[in-house]
Image 1 (cartoon, rainbow, N blue to C red):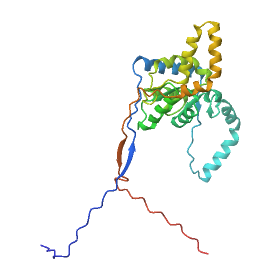
Image 2 (image 1 turned 45 degrees about the horizontal axis):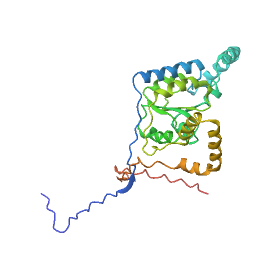
Image 3 (image 1 turned 120 degrees about the vertical axis):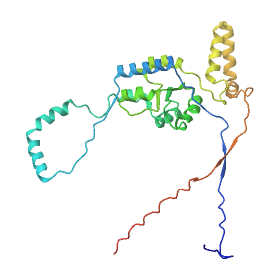
Image 4 (image 1 turned 180 degrees about the horizontal axis):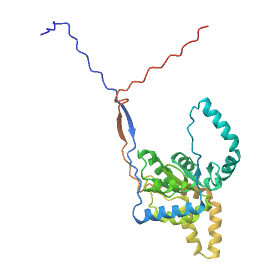
Length: 283
């Protein structure tokens, strides 16, 4: 039995775990998933339209290069001289790599990055997101963006499985249709009524378009004299009406406290590998 002498043992103090506190968003955003008949209708209309247009990305298969011996190289050179006309014939039948129609491709925004840039520029009239996107935060920021641009957006299951093979891609997590997409107008008009409205708490006020639409409806029922007077009033008080239309309706707004989130940097204590020093060339 080994006996530890008194005064030789030392106790190690446990290191304090550094915790960083930060403010978190109190709202939780979730996509409204489109299921059932609406999902099948959307996927079917997209499939029919893409097949009709014939848009697809063609990629040339990559061949692995192997190191050849001298004898194999000589045989290859002899065979290549005899098979030159055959290769020229086959190259004529092969399609060029890339998109079949670039003008139609420019009417779409494919992928999360491309969709985000298009939403920031307010270029989309419809957005569809695949449910298989993991983690969910990859596409969660698109909810606020599409709501701020008044763009219909919804989450469609099996979107990537159905549309990606038709376009010659491996996966599609987000698909956006631009406002100037004349090739997809019929499909967009048919899909938009099937998409539920997004719920974002701070967009509960009337937009300028809704105010203008209500104003045009009321002006249709007025007489010509009344319309002339109304137009004169609009010209004089145009600046005042713009400021009123931009004001928010704060009657239904409910303030919520911010959440405090505690983060532990590097909880698994994974150390970075040491950098390799470059060997200095001796002069």
